[in-house]
Image 1 (cartoon, one colour):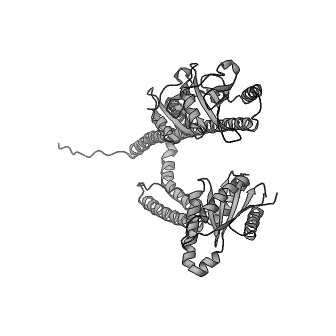
Image 2 (cartoon, one colour; image 1 turned 45 degrees about the horizontal axis):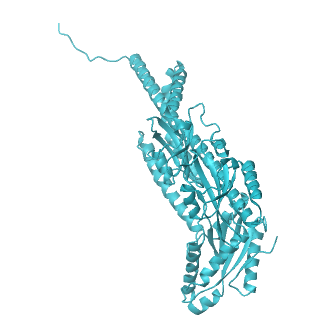
Image 3 (cartoon, helix red, strand yellow; image 1 turned 180 degrees about the vertical axis):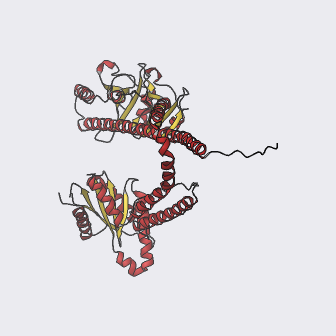
Length: 525
């Protein structure tokens, strides 16, 4: 009897059961993997962000502390300058009072121009009358404000010396006012850095000096170690700040953030062990498995998954288009291939469209804020910056600048020469002002200069430098031009930006009335 062989067929129930079983198994695996990666990325970003925030906070606190220290030394130098006739006992009392009240420094001293310690607080240091050598002598010879790198003092302490030059009322150099910080002993700096140094996550921070040596570390025995080979320390030494996944010198992977302390050139590194994040991920996966096993997911998950997979890219693209239409800045999605042909084509088209629209919007925004002739920010940008500073209650000064007899330049040499004069003025002023100052073209031959954190009295000196520079240089018409300037200060002269501008204009007009080529400070109080 001949046997007829039939190809084996799957039963419908078997096929469906197998399909659902395989789908659920793969869906669970995919879900676990995706959730793991998402949670991992989220945790990494979170701890990098937290570390960056704490590192930045420490950096700003230390930076502010050293700025206060510098001011304290300057005030002491000014006190000695203004009170030349006071006795050694009075000077000693002043140093003792400053050291105890501020607690900035472990010791304060006046070292004269010959290197002799004239006064020191506390007197128990025992160096009064001694002649200083080494690092202190080098600082003395510099004759300028200095913050040394950490060094070992004759006492065997690891210290940092901050100094301020001291001149008498006749301008004669009289030495330095120096403050020392003992890095391994109690002071305000150690109190700031020693607060909450290691938390429950194993996170900790340390501080390095400009030479790559440890200034502060949870392990006090490591203070003074050279860690300049650390890749993060290398970046700090180059003035960089940021976040990074790094393997430290003990071969431990860390989520680290690093920030420069501008006032000192030091750097702060805050880091969290990757092992802690991995432990959190392990607990997360365990919980997730418990949540996705209930039987009803076996019945419903396939249809829900398919529907969501089909709808997800279209919803995402619709949200992107909606954000773009609302004028919001949209991050261009990555143009990755999608399994669905329509979704893939639509995603690529939307990516190209969003990128093109945002490029055009950025160009238009930049053009709207820039004067085409001088390439300076225009009046609209000026109003925007002033509004932000005023809202933050930031002190700043405003200089209104006008070219004297500019009409005669146009009438005599033509408007093209007048344009060259405007461009010349813009470049010349930009070469003189500070990096933090902002220069704008207000209109015609009028310009405005904003100086943040600068009082009117200080602004006057800067304005005079600008005026004299313009007066003494040859302009594009073959001879010097002159400018008149008017100054007002926020919020001293007014809290209203319109009034502030009006007062600067009135001061400018006063400069014109008094013969031009001069600077006038607003008289309103």
